[in-house]
Each structure stands twice: as C-alpha cells, then as structure tokens.
Image 1 (cartoon, rainbow, N blue to C red):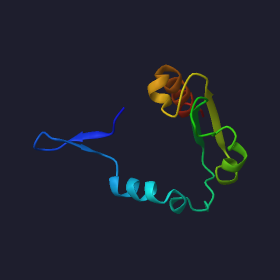
Image 2 (image 1 turned 60 degrees about the vertical axis):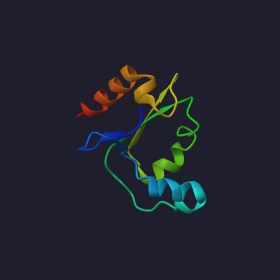
Image 3 (image 1 turned 120 degrees about the vertical axis):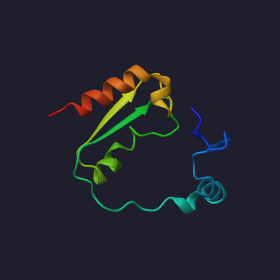
Length: 100
C-alpha cells in the first residue's frame, strides 16, 4: 500500500511527511531518541515475524513504557501485517477491541 492522497485538482501526492523522511535518511541515528514516559492503558502490538523490525525480541524493552501491552506475532507477515495477512490482522484487532 502506497500512502497517497488525491489533491483537489486530481493529482496525486504522498501523504507521508517527506521532509522528515529525507532528514531521517540523511541522519538515521538523529531521529531515534531515548523514549520517555509511561502509558498505563491497553496497547496492542501486531507484528510480522518476517519483518526486519524485531518487535518480539524488543518486548521487554517495550513493556517498560507500555506495561499492559499485548503482542500478536503473525507467522507469514512482514512489517505490513494488514496487507500480508488481513484476516489475521483484523481478527487480532477486533478481539483486542472487544475485550472487557
């Protein structure tokens, strides 16, 4: 899925903040700051096991900031779980949202 939006004159533009992406590409270590704060609410991390981002390995670190986080690993998905496995993604999300 490409993040595009149509302008009033019918042209297409990226929805992403290209200035920020350009800065990040030029200095990737400069965008990562040490996280601060604590979110006590419920949080759901749905991630693909084929993703280059290792969310499962980072679970202890994530739990420092989201102590009530739940994690759903999706076997045959990359970073874009919602595209790779839409049924699994939707089921995980709906089950999370319907919890009491």
